[in-house]
Length: 131
Image (tube, rainbow, N blue to C red; front, side, top):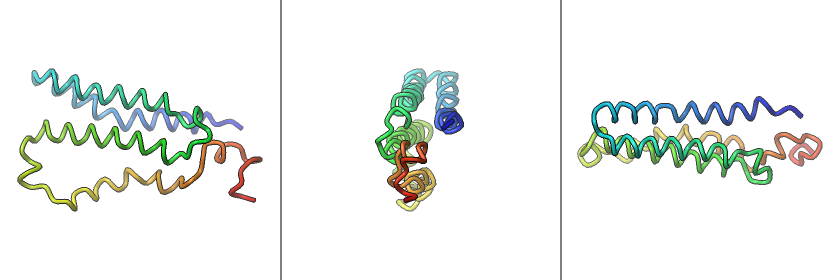
């Protein structure tokens, strides 16, 4: 089965969701905050490495949701770091626990894929979910 579209979706979609990190790293570097720019760029590189190392077609027997979780935590870590750098002191003054609900859409793939593995999604003859 041709799974080129799914592979491109994983790689290009993941890379697209990391672009804002490298853009903000560039802004930090322009502002003269080189250390925070390097740390942010590190999050970007770690995210890219994760996309290639833990690609679902390399781990065909691992549930796809677990592969997404690792990537999501990298993105959330980068967001938390950059938020703290961009708005120092903002967490203490105006943070509300309900603001974390804005992160829920990030977990959509975890619920959509459920317990499915790459092998379940791309080998219809072996797919036990449709029997």
